[in-house]
Length: 166
Image 1 (cartoon, rainbow, N blue to C red):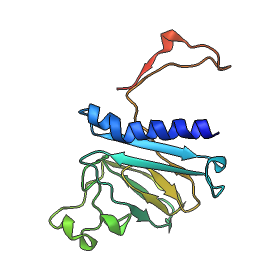
Image 2 (image 1 turned 90 degrees about the vertical axis):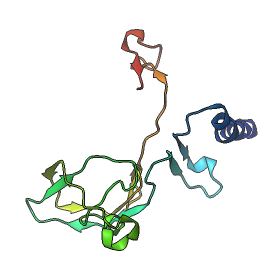
Image 3 (image 1 turned 45 degrees about the vertical axis):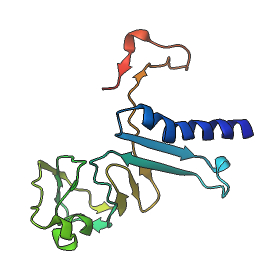
Image 4 (image 1 turned 90 degrees about the horizontal axis):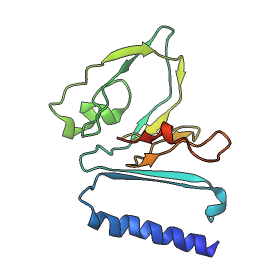
């Protein structure tokens, strides 16, 4: 157990301190997940950083809502740079009147609409990791890697089914 922990700490130190110095690419993200056996409190947790230079990393809370039957939800183009979203229908974080730094910025125009469910849970969001009021979370981890698919039983690879990340 101690050797695994030391290996993890060494890997983390290299990732945080050595690799950035050797790379011209500073836009990287880090996702870490810990099981209850790896924490001193017995809790499981996940953390994610969106480490891009131009990202809008503000943390917004979108409250739970009940929607009338037939409501349509607006869909916006995804932006990572500040401001990633400007509107009055989701969170005060995105409203011009609550954010002086947005003065002069107009609401985004929806790309389209989809049917809205009757009830939505409240959730927290940043650039792209999300967690709802019940602790259900998701995010992603970008990796410049070549990935190979495994056989259904976990053995071997299918070299003709190579997946390359962009």
